[in-house]
Image (cartoon, rainbow, N blue to C red):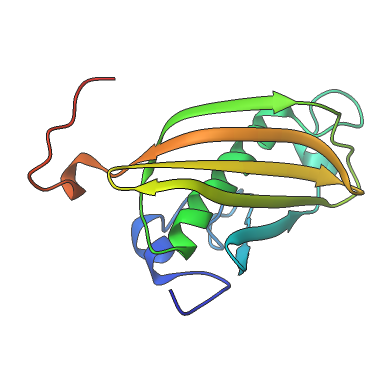
Length: 148
């Protein structure tokens, strides 16, 4: 892809996503850009996303990590869906301070892509993720896809 802020692929395949759509009223509005092979972005961690007092909700953290990896794929010209997601929570993510997100492809080979992501705050890793993404069945031509 030639653009490094958003992609036509994201807009076409994910137009109203609660995590990354700029038009979803109650969405997170995550934006990722390419920095070399990595996708990078940030999230403000506003109080409206609180779980335990003073901390970002774990479901929001999970959604951000998944969205970071999905957008990494979009930025590299692939549209795939999450097939498996593993999150490791290491430190609380505090409200009122921005979190940095990074994601990268570790294995690229249609129909399966493997990625990793990291959410950090003030340089400290707070959560990490590993995931497998798969091309949607409608995009796999002449390939037999087995049951999960």
